[in-house]
Image (cartoon, rainbow, N blue to C red; front, side, top):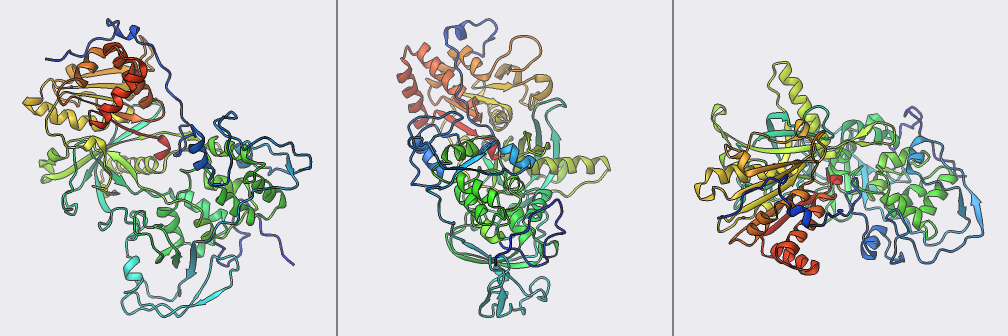
Length: 623
């Protein structure tokens, strides 16, 4: 007789002790006296969901990719709420009442499922388990010396059976542990197998200085970091570039990891115990390693902290199917199966494209679900590096007072989102860097020079802003928010070069100059001549967005883009800003070039292909 699975409570005291399953040019004009913008029709940017890494589906093909199931049939129309529905709606006559979980996490999902068809169709099969967790002899010596060997018998600790024993050959640490496991302090740096830039390892950059750029009261907080890369290993043909970017491998916050393990009833005693992690295929958990099977010595805490994304992606059908399989309450199982069935397609779309959902939130919402950790890891996504543009010219980043240390600079914006439990949630990367900044400030207050680190790498991301150009033509830089940061390095270099004088202009969009103007006064002695700041939320006077200023500066825009080697760069959020600027540029081309809208669009597409119109945009879901 099968016994019901245990339910989670606010503590883990009920959990058993066993290991759980598992661009001569016109100047910038004053937009207050220009009338050009009045000749151009204002536009409303396309809106995208701000909190999801994945874009809201705009067509059937996009939606198809969101559904995870190739068998899903979609209409060429939206049913509201940015979701798509399956074929024709069938009236279900045989319905049954289902009790909904009585907790805040579930209510935050806003599912409101009261009746479910007695017979569900199109329910996918249980996803393949591609990850296994095996125990390692707890008596093995710390550090895994060369002489150490693993026992011939290892215990499968996070599988459903929780009792199988697999016989494997004796393995020396030179074969497995020395290859994949190191003595790295994983509380501050990822395990050695987290290698996003093979064959190079992650570099531990010390924070040389940090400061907050925004003022109290700003909607978003932005921090500036100087990272010491003086002894960064030489990489052939690769160096830090003005306009370039670095990748940062950021961990999940420790409290989030702890809560996740609590929800799965993983005993505290085994969370930091070495395990043998086996994968059947793929790159996980190495980020960009070869596609292959792996055997890695690690710990449960490390693999969740550095390799598993718990909050950046909406739930998938395989994930919900797995939760249903291990639901202890029949009502929770029925709701989960309904969500992934043909009949529940519309509700599933609403769940995917609605309010932000995290993995721990789902586990709180369905408290009777206790999937094995290794089975759950088989369905969750890789925790990917976050990319940040350099905000300085790295070729002139020597600090004489610090024995000419080479520094690179980045700016990071932190945006808070309301969470289901009443707290505020930040992005994984921005949240980590804010915590490092706050720790740096606190240490400085105490008169301590802190040794705080940022795990990072260079040379991997082909940032369009870092392209090398044969000649220095006129340049217009358009950015909003932290999107202005990479332009600071461009301007620093241009203003130092006499051949480039009066050849660079900046349009900077901010909310309120008193609160969130980034790098004000740090653009060189010609700042007032080359930079125009527009404010969208200032308390007095006209409010503007960057796209409004683009229309107001139509003469300058048109002159730059039609000059020899003239270029226009746009950098900022893809959530409205980039689309708004592109529409403004189309309006400028229509007005100044006497082009119809379609020809104006084609004009800018051609400029993109020729490398004269360059856009770097991101979603805040990728923080």
